[in-house]
Length: 340
Image (cartoon, rainbow, N blue to C red; front, side, top):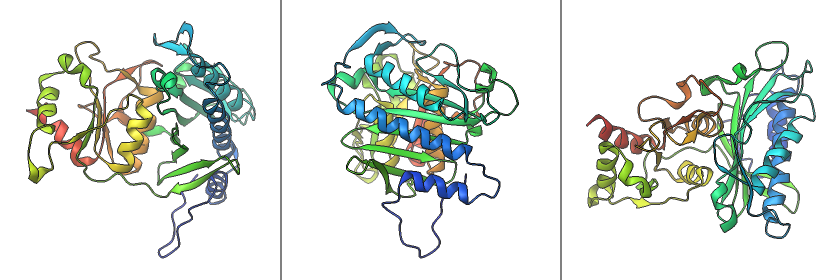
């Protein structure tokens, strides 16, 4: 699928539906057979179903925990479980997704062995679980890879660097529900209009600003940071009118929410490794890779602090990594303190 790129002088297509955008991408490719298009439309359908549950969560007894923990040791919320099963059920319907890997599942889930099942999907069904019960923005993150061989999918098929993603996106459930997606070209945002039941283009060709005086980090972890991160943190809070410091702190604690703000307004989001979690906290396959793919497509940067996120060769499904992403200049500032 190719991203739609408006011709010079062409008017904006704000109001275009997500389904039409995806379909036009297929029609623009002579060799397209519709499988990829169908898969993306299924993800959009799942997003509508999840947003319906999120909007009614306090009314239908799906707030709170299940009492279980997921594959990475986190407490499972009831909505986590519902979103996970919704995505798996919808992805398995049209025989275009061979298998899926979810943050909530210990192993991959085989969904189809049909000849048309040429894609693999990774996802975090409901990012920001700890914020569910207090009505703070949460979201779904996903990435799509191509299955490169005949026969059933295997765990090894998912252990690919993020640069091989065919598409990535997230859905943020906040004051409105927005679906942000890229297939490697432009990044577009679609806002859900419940009155017509469609995602409509609202943010066309999103570009990360080069710099913004905003930073996002969990300062509760400050005592565990490396000296470089501590010095950077002191620097962003220092007074310097010429450099527009101190920067403003904005931290939600939901990756989708913090990333979405940074994508639209610029600045930096940082979840570095520390003495408690030297390998990082965020999951490479389900969170870091899809978000990094989006940021790079929008002109931003995503790194561990030492290497590009999209170049990491995964070794396990639930591998964790540090994640620093945002505007080019903001990330360069952060990295310069690591060098010092």
